[in-house]
Amino acid sequence: MKHTLSVLVEDESGVLSRISGLFARRGFNIDSLAVGQTEKQGISRITMSVRGDNRTIEQLIKQLYKLINILDVQNVTNVPCIERELMLIKVYTMPENRFHILEIVNIFRAKVVDISDDSLTLEVTGDPGKIFAIQQILNQHTILQIARTGKITLVRESNVNTELIKKSLDYSNHRLYS
Image: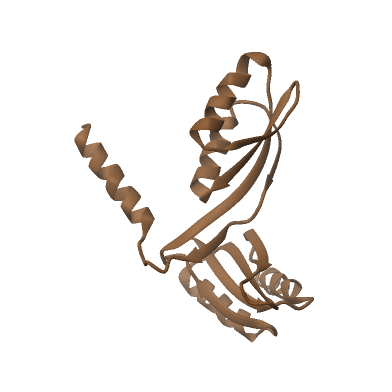
């Protein structure tokens, strides 16, 4: 199972190296990693996605707490969160398929950030599901380059789980049109 960890650290050199070393020694691959400053000066938030069962992730969290400069570790996998990711994707285009790609851009509320005679570079921001979906659709065209940030996340203070609401609405809509 994929887990999302939110780690608050003191903004000191070597912190990320110690964390990645811990993961490497334990044989874990970090699927996604994003690091940035927080609202407090000198504190950074590291958001990472890691695969493992619940017991293994609990052990990993205990090991993280033993490292220097670690302030807090949260497994936010099952907590209502706001998740976002950014992807830049460069797609080869010919005049006959450019309009089709622009329709996809419009549907996904992406932005065209560069255009040339034979390519479009798109900026896509959203939850990881949206990023995955547009990438799958654009795979029918020739993708020249992709650059992605890691997933970032903040816990929803409202405690509203929008994923459950989406599933509930999808189920209701399915019943209406069945």
